[in-house]
Amino acid sequence: MKLCEADSRELCEQLEELNKSYNDYKAMKLELNISRGLPNEQQLDLNDGLFHVLDETNCTAADGTDCRQYGVKYGLPECIHLFSELIEVPDEQIVLGGESSLNLMYDQFMRIYAFGTCKEEPWAVQQAKLGAQGEKLKWICLVPGYDCHFNITEALDFEMISVPLLGDGPDMDMIETLVREDETIKGIWCVPQYSNPTGTVYSDDVVRRLASLQTAAKDFMIFWDNAYVVHHFYLEGYEKNIVLNILEEAKKYGKEDHILYFSSTAKITFPGSGVCAVASGANTVEEIKRCYNLQLFSKDKLNQLRHVLYLKNKENIVEHMKAVAALLVPRFELVDGILKDHVLYEDVCTWNVPEGGYFITAYTMKGCAEKALALAEAAGVKVATAASTYPYHRDPADSVVRLAPTYPPMEELDTAMHLFCVCINIAAIEKELEAR
Ligand SMILES: Cc1ncc(COP(=O)(O)O)c(C=O)c1O
Image 1 (tube, rainbow, N blue to C red):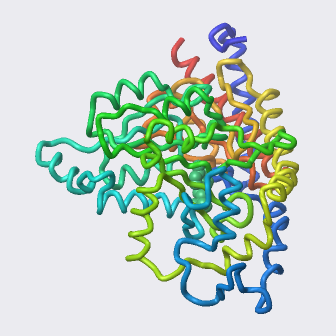
Image 2: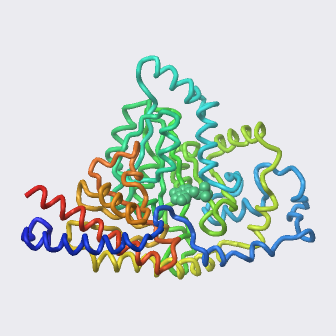
């Protein structure tokens, strides 16, 4: 039943009950947090082996490199090969980063900003020239999307153009029209598999259209952040990656150099202490290496080596991710179940049920997200700020809420979600009653 079909008196009674329940939660002085996608403690425990695989007796790489020493700045060959298996890209197209792919994305962005790419002027120079005419470089941001991506483009004063993320990936009709005409649009953020926060998996058609995009800008770049490449909940025996390989597709159109394909072990082993990689076409890989030559003598090879010794190969990673899924699936099912049971009217909230990744996206009734989250926070449950999944923190519908069920213990998640339901019900019923 829809909220608008409910009788006003009944709604008033429900609101009274909900407020009572809300005050009970408030009296509990909760301090819960479902705002960020962190691995839970049991997930981290699964990786304790990482502490024991490496010591002074085996810190020599396969080619004889002493990993305690400077050198091999683009990455240990065996660790590059591990990523090659993971993302299905040839070893020679991969360069390893440090311990965070977000950091690597920022670095790659700044490299092009400072030095340019594809023989075009640096974005910084282009930005300054446009600035003199009161204009800006632009960037495509899929919505809802990942706030950390948007923060980078916002900080560098790119005008962010919101494009809807549909059921099978970005709205490609809109993107094709935009980039064909406007040479100031320089790129797009994509999370092609189990998108943060909607869980969307891009279809083959979408990947092909992105790979072959006709852009007015000669230095248009696709930042392809495949952070959740093996983070499935239900798949068994998935030898082949489920999203089409964008580098292989782009190669058919001579556009490999326009793809920056990122991946990371952050959500496989220890976030903040993982290894990450970037892959691209030969020219872009050359540009990345040239920049590394300025930046560093060596990344953390000991960490690269211990990841190889611990993770071994893709088959082993897939087995490991099954153990991760066994810990995560009950949490996602719990959230789904509580929403099913406690959202009072069908239009108060809808939500996605992802098949992997780290998030559930809830869509509250229009104009209710901010109020509901403020209520939750006042009662001690922190949910990601409303609108954090939109550029400039502006969700025009004030509706999208990113829920991160992975971290809290089940009992805390249970309490947080019950309170969340109370808050979205209150916000929606109050809005409906005000409108009558
Ligand atoms: C889409 C996406 N990319 C990147 C990251 C961060 O990864 P890393 O720890 O490798 O920087 C996250 C973490 O939440 C993410 O959701």
